[in-house]
Image 1 (cartoon, rainbow, N blue to C red):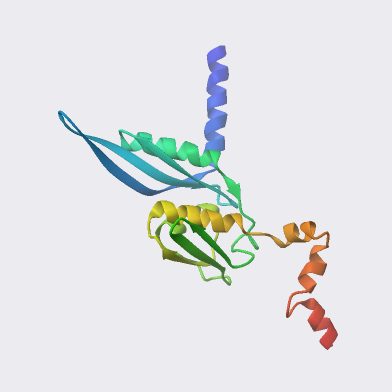
Image 2 (image 1 turned 180 degrees about the vertical axis):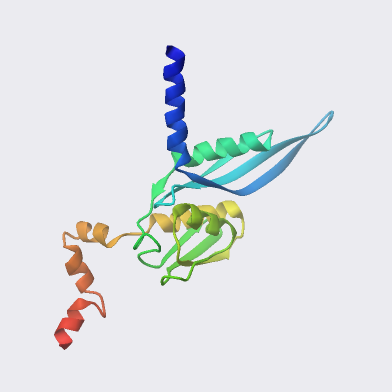
Length: 189
């Protein structure tokens, strides 16, 4: 009987894990020279997301590639962050991020633009579930720095609801203050 319960718990975990999409961003092979020759090790960088606004990244090291990827995926699932998306497809506002020598610029884009980003940033946006964004990497092209800079930028993303709550305002009042918003349209009429 105990075995059936354990199997059931395992299945629940697999179902919960299946909601996540993971993308391998980078694998690094390192060699350690020892008396008998070289010993190879592998480091993997993985991005995991649910395509509904949650995303995380992880780093894993092992002597074999599949084990390194598994460790990186588990690490990524532990470090998930929630990113507010406008209409579930793009950013609310333009934002910059940096980590070390890596700098990124993320810009909101109109519907139908698609993901205009390279390499590691594209993997992050696809797993996040973002459909329209324009991103530019400046400085370091190291995938680790680019991923961390992108996460720094995504962490600075604010939704109008969060800004309104912080300022003790209603969302409609906050958005009415925008240039070209409803407040100007009413005053011109």
